[in-house]
Length: 164
View 1 (spheres, helix red, strand yellow):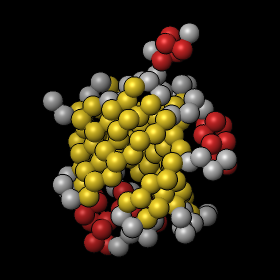
View 2 (view 1 turned 30 degrees about the horizontal axis):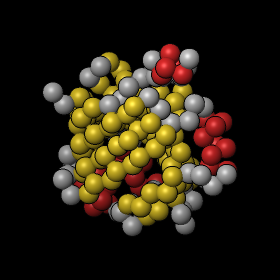
View 3 (view 1 turned 90 degrees about the vertical axis):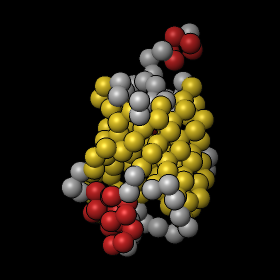
View 4 (view 1 turned 135 degrees about the vertical axis):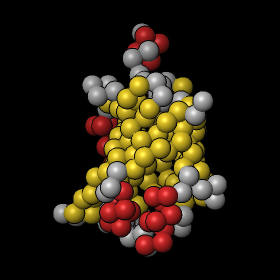
């Protein structure tokens, strides 16, 4: 039965390159306290992403910004947001270190919307970030980003194209 269930999950595996960011991308990073310079680099720099997924296990989610900064994540997708919230509440979020910050990641697969969803909180920060990944077609992945800090939030979109 578990194998049959695995067939229902989208496979996000592949080599991806960022092809477009929405206008709100700068504000998304600004809400997270990033400097003007870092925001401009974030928007313009080449971003390569490699995802290796086996069912609910993501054994590699590597992002390389401008060939300079590499962030690699490894995580298991929970089967629901409730399961992911429980994981976080029990102190089992995945600890990540990147760019001088410590983040805590939980991930889940939304079978209704067919989205891979990530939620990061950060040590000594008041903001949190949500990432919704959706395969628009076999060669296009849309990632809806949302940063929330108290009553303020910024949403934006990033499009990735599969490398041939």
